[in-house]
Length: 169
Image (tube, rainbow, N blue to C red):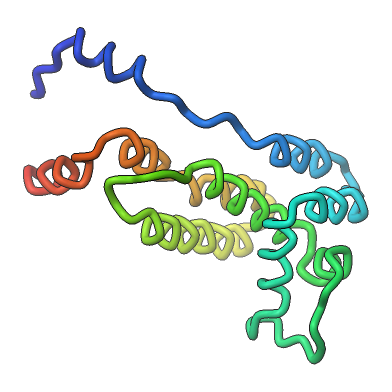
């Protein structure tokens, strides 16, 4: 059993600042609550953020989608990609941007792994239709290790402690 100093624990907890949920994410979630989400509202929301717009256009023009011509309009990209996938993409992009800063580990691998798990959850969700909402599965996959970037941003020695903790198992 681990002996934890309550005073030190309280000090660590009080020093944490979890980033606020991005406003655009709250707006997207509100739009997506509708029984028939408005594609125009989603496209307008994405268009209002140059970083999101750029990322979505990069995705739609990637070899994965195999477009015969370059897509340059966000509304068209949203229509082609689909609202469920757009919701997942925008959510992951906004949350990734909220958890940026000088970290004690490379967060790129963390995000790559989290996206892989989120996509695996989507794959599973598509096989067990109507059991669990697919967007919820994606979010669970994306955030299954959400403490890692918070700890890595807060503690310079997080990588050493993580390695040590895994060695004790």
